[in-house]
Image 1 (cartoon, helix red, strand yellow):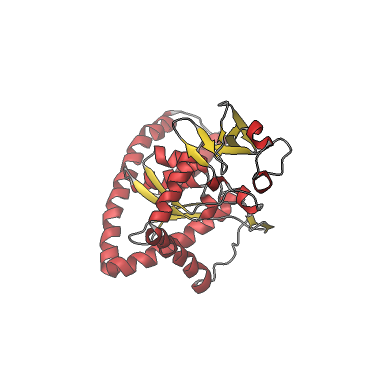
Image 2 (cartoon, one colour):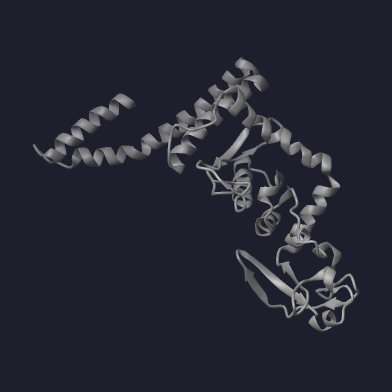
Length: 289
């Protein structure tokens, strides 16, 4: 697991929670970081909640243009903490000082020179970008030393998902109070699990085993939370209603399996290991029904 550029031996647990009742909705063991988890987790939560549209509040680790764009296309409005462009950390003019014009698909630099693109898309690691440049204007630019250290001139890279990234940034900046709700929605659940319940490590190893252990802890948390919301009697009433649904499903499955049982009974195999094994299974199965 990668945390703040430090490699830790552990599992990166992803979790989705609802804002109204502070209940765990879904979870996953994820990958080494949160970068590629936004849209899979958000789409899964949306399907489980059976809603047509929802908002999704996440921290900076989830801010990836591709996944923000996927969420937007599936009626999920993201409020993911914006990341600074890497060029803002090298002491030179950052991308924010270049004005983008959507109509002409070009940038205007701080010296009022226009940077254009060929329209080609390049792969920069896992990111797909377009290049914007005007090396001829850079040759005689008086502001060059503040803009680039490249011998040929300034090259601006724009992600193909930049519009989705900027729209997400605008939403967060215009709704700071709403974004801060993220800490109230998710952080206190993990605080309860870690600080009050002592769930700071898992007993199991392997993603699926760890996820099963995490599921048990989160289900226990949800039950405790439901008691606070509904009360003991209210929860018991809801569970009884759920029991009727489970019983109906069980009876349906039993009816569907009945022809299979008859076909095995009619398949005459006398005094064979298969017949002995089947009889033992048939008797054991009755004890569970």
